[in-house]
Length: 220
Image (cartoon, rainbow, N blue to C red; front, side, top):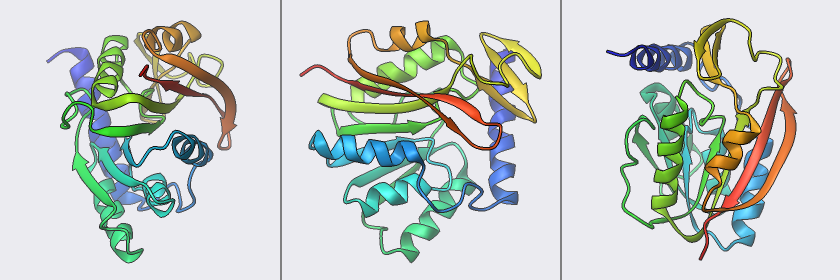
């Protein structure tokens, strides 16, 4: 097993145990990026949305309440179980489907099957640059022409960049969680072949975390 595979396995276990110990850890209110994404998706005429890294589902539930059909993936069975429970409680079970999935593997979806993809801080998990490129290629595969991809990532201007245990490739582990901090070169590289609509800087949380919200669209 490579060092990257070992780190990935450890992070999967870390997130699983965290969701088990702290159900609904991010609360029930949607994130600000999810609110932006819903507005952008609606303007683009999207109906079916894939959320990668849905966790316990605060954003998936919000997108469903906003009228989208949501396919939610995560590699934590505990997180997805909490999402399924909330969806039933809120009468949204018919609008949300869940899949246990590790984004290091190809997406378990056919070509051109969704209108939009949302990922809040999923791309900046403990993924190598090559794994991130492969994932974005998969996003492009499952999106329909003119489909929209909104993602957020912590970047190299964040206070935790360079702190904690370094794993190479701009990945640093702090407090048990490993993060791949993005530079602008990587953002631009990932938009090759897309229309890069926006790179928006914002802050979130108590540190605060410093992030980019990236919106890009497939050509027709």
